Structures are given as structure tokens and as C-alpha cells.
Amino acid sequence: MRAILCHNPKSGDGDHSKTELLNTLKDAGIDARYCSIKSGDFPRVLREPAELIIAAGGDGAVATVIKSMPDRGVPLAILPLGTANNIAHSFKIIGSVNELVKNWDLSRFCPLDVGVVAGSWGERPFVEAVGLGALPQLILKSDREQTAKVGEGRDALADEIAEAGAIDVTLAIDGAAIPTDDILAIEVVNIAYTGPRLPLLEGGEKTRGTLGVAVIRRKERVATMSWLNAPHSGRAPFSQLNGRRVELAWSGAPLRIDDEAMELSSSPQQAVAAIDGRSVKVLVPA
Image (cartoon, rainbow, N blue to C red; front, side):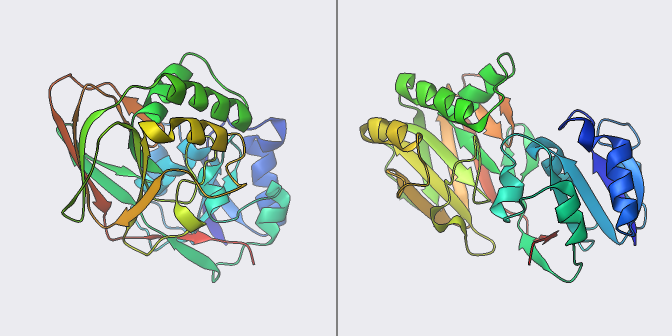
């Protein structure tokens, strides 16, 4: 099998080096062309003919590969080497590199929608989520203070929610206005997990072509902080909505698109999020 291995060399440890990954793939009968996502050759290599694209790294690396794929008809295999590994967990891709590679089957895949959000900055694809409020603030701080564990990330997010003020925002889903009094955070989610591996999508699944919308209000602050300690122990205490087109208008708050937070001007901002219509075929376990 001919494959392209797209790798973030900074992810994982020594067992996940270029040499180790290529040797593991070779043992499984996969002839892989290596490319670091940090390389200037990355976009060109990704356009080369292949039967399989392999994304090895954390969520940022995997999302970069997904958003850069010129042909979404080629199956994608994920080797999760990061901290949260939200994209992999959303497809129940868990295990060692060796175990995952041995069980790949090109005929066994699930579709992954790719979102697109448009605003004054232009149009950007996203895989995980687009959000306002606590998570963008946390990402801005994390650029300076790295958290090494999922639990630490959840604790840091709880601290952000504890201090968060209401956002000046309006929200509409499929043309219907949603009450926005005292909203602390809005997350428009595309996959089951996001942030420090949080299940913000009710039930873990959604209808193809739709987005989940998590809305945390001031009255849900304390309950949400408690939920962050054990997010799998019960239903989330905030609203979890669903729709095909999500419109946001706000001012004075940063916006996050996947793992990047943008500090926009204080003037009124608008964004529209939807699915762009072309899904990616993600290899999944049996």
C-alpha cells in the first residue's frame, strides 16, 4: 500500500519518531512517503498520489492534515500522539501505534464533516469547534503556560469559567434566534470531543451536515465547574443544541477556530458556521 505519512515531529516521545513510525508502517506492509507538517514541502507532498493519508500527531496536526487534504476521497488514518486527542477519541481510535496500524482496513471508515466559518477575517475551515468565551481565553493563556495533562486543562478551564463575564453576543441557529442573556461561553462543535477532551456534543454523535452548539449561561456557572471534574459522570448542565447554520454577532471577545484563538478588534464582529459538504473518510477500529 502506498501512503503519505504526515507527522508532527514534536508530538509524543522517542517511540513516535520519524524512524520508528516508518519502521512500524513498513512491518505492516505500508510503503509510506514521509512529510513533516512543519515542512514547506507539506502541501506539495499531500497532493501526490496515495491510497492512504496518515496523520500522526496531536489534534492540531491531525486537523491541519484534514483541512489541507486536496482529495477527501482518499482514506485518512489517525495516529494520536498528543494530549487530548479529541479527533481520535471522537472516532474511538485508542491504542498504541502498533495496534492501530495492524488493524487498519481501508473499507472500514466513518465520514467526518469539515466545518467552515466565515467572518471579517475571511473563510476558515475547522474540524473541532468554533467558540467564544472561556475556551478561547484559555487557549490564549496556554500559549504562555502549557498544560501537560487533560485534567490540568479542565482545571484551568474551570478557573476561566469562574472568572468569566457575560459576552455581548447574539446567536441564531437555522434562522431562529436563541436567547442570549448572561452567556459565558458558546461552542459550535463538529465532533464529539473538544478542548481538554470534553464531550460537548450531546450523545457523542450528530446528524451529518449539522453542528452542535453548547451554550453556558451565568446561572449554570457552578454546575458547569462541577461537571468539569467528571464530564462523563452525567449529562452536561448547559444547553446543547443542533443545527445546520449557526450565526454569531458579538463584540469584545476573542474567537477560537480549533486550537487557534484570534483577538479581534473591539468593533462588532459577525461569523457564520456551517458544514462545507465534503466529508473525510476516517479509518475506524472494528
